[in-house]
Amino acid sequence: MIETAMVELIDRATAECAEQQRPDLHNRLRQIRTRVLDPAQLVLVVGEPKQGKSELINALVNAAVCDSGEDVTTRVPTLVRHSEHPTAQVIEQEPASGPAALDRFPVPVEQVRERIDQAISNGRPVSRGEVGIPRAVLKDGLVLMDTPGIGATSATLTARTLGVVAEADALLIVSDATQELTHNELSFLKKVTKLCPNVAVVQPKTDITPHWRKVVEVNKRHLAGAGINAKIFPVASTIRMRAMHAKDTTLNTESGFPQLVEYLRGEALGQHDQLTRRLVAQNVADAVDELSETLKAELTGQSPRTAAETLIELETAQRRSEDLRRITGRWQKTLSDGIGELFADIEFDFRERSWAITNQIGDTLEEADPVTVWDDFVEWLDGALATAIEENFTWLDLRREQLRDRVTDEFLREHPSIRPRIEQIPIPDPFGQVTPLKKPSNGVYKRLDQVLTGLRGSYGGVLMFGLITSQIGLPLLNVVSISAGLLLGSRSLNEETDARLRRRQAEAKTTAQRYVEHVVFHVNKEAKDGIRATHRALHQHFTQLTEEAQLEISKEIQSIKRIAERSAVDREDRAREIRRKLEELSLLRRRAGMLTANRITAA
Image 1 (cartoon, one colour):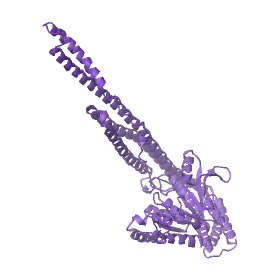
Image 2: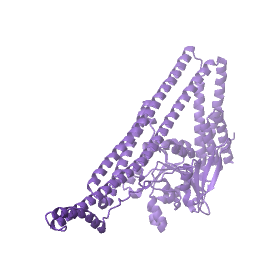
Image 3: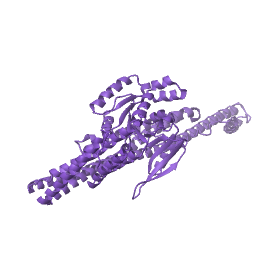
């Protein structure tokens, strides 16, 4: 009965949102309606990147269902629910004119993340991953969802997380115990409590943070100061996994997870009806308040105004529109010029660094035998290139941030809060993609070849000096001719040895220079891809802000014109209609408030 009443209440609020053309509020309430009709208890695990969300879920269910690690980033939500046998699915959402259709593809449990990454790389519209495992903590209907990091560079990841918040019965926001809650985390908490009021904070990594108790106390004060009612659970996922593996109760208690599990079972599961009431009441009330504010603003605009006032307002709005167009032209030119400079400067910087390495290669191989120093030379060359790559990409990140700041300043100097975050570009490792350096050939001068070279050189000396000395009566083979043959043979041997060394040096220089050019080719490709991604992200971010501002101004201009064209009688009729609608919304809000008092009136 209560469930039916809540659904009816949501439907009434949804109809009001549709009537006032608020698709954002309409979609949020439709999501909550789906949650009310779903008997499962969905708990979202959210937080900034690298805070230990995936590891927390793994520790809760005692299974590696979510990939975790410093080099792992959750790209789409992953749902973990109870199942009698381990199962996994990748769910894709195909655009359609009617309700969205979900395509489910079974995959091996251990390959969920790999298949998701592969599908995203292939351009598939992946909605989420789902994993089912037989675990007692999930048996009573608890469903956990790992989400993409909030505040990541990609606005898409944050949007995906916020997109599922309205579907949740409860939220666990994860912020590791190494530091207190950040401003971004507190801002996010304020935002999501309007969508889902049932929130708790989990602080993992207490096993590596000696001062975690002090951090927890500071965070309690932060939450109280922000007006956020949320419990804090300090935990250690690593200790929990070790305790579950060893079946050590004492160690499990030390991990802090029993309190968290008790909270999930007691408040998230045991108070399902109450939490659902709070969720519905909060969201319906927020939607009604937003609709009411819009109507009140319109009601204020129904008062008669002079032609001069209308003209001033219209000119002001049009001037703002013109200013916005000028600002748009400036930030687009700044972005375009900055990206062009960035392409040229980054490529030149790495070329200059690689040329310095190439010159050092020439100096080194000019004096040394490549065969004897080859292993040390290769190690030095890879190390020098790796250092150059790291310094080049560090400078690239700095230049990208500077470009972001310049574009932001051109867009709107008085609103620095709109400055988008830029994700650091991973430093590339091209050495696995290039052909390894080949050791120069002709390194061994065989003894027989040395003898033959010496004989060739000595033969001419013996013959020449033998003929000369024969003029004074000496035989062809004498001390002088033999000594000359030995001297010239030794000289020929030395010259051939030097020639072979020069050939090895030339071959090694050519091989090393080609190797460096191959590395430069791959590194420049990675740098250009990163710069293009930055260009797209910044252009998309500021284009969206521009379109939103332009849409707001256009609506304002249309409203001014519409009000100016409306007669006094029309304005009075509209004012009466607005007052009637405000009374209906006020009644709807009172009914939403009654949900938390465990009673609801009939429509």
